[in-house]
Length: 135
Image (cartoon, rainbow, N blue to C red; front, side, top):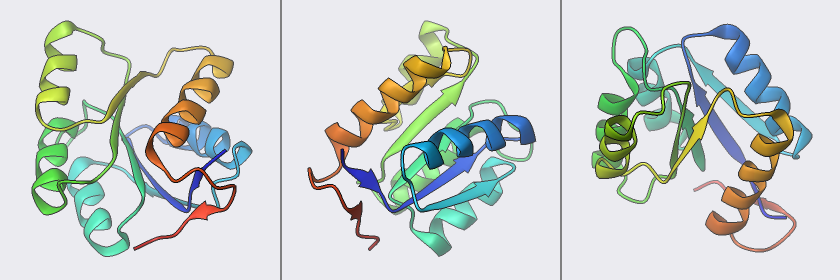
């Protein structure tokens, strides 16, 4: 399985960041960064240039869709997965329209999230068993 070297989790809920981080670690991701809102996430993206961003939609300061726009303007090839409990067609369409690569629901069972993350890794990163080289 291909594994990104550095993943940024952007979510205002600490327990979601922790849970998502545990899932990523179980898949072998070596570096996991965290941000508590879209503004901090965008700034961290600029500094750290992660291979993958998992971002909540609803957050204070700057929401996930606005942060997504900023990230994609800075790096059109950025891989951003929207991670949220909201699954309205409008939000999915908005996220896709602004360049979200994938969309995962937070309330998905653990095994399904792991399978989806593995698929995202396989679809997105080179097919070697080493962590993806950070730029």
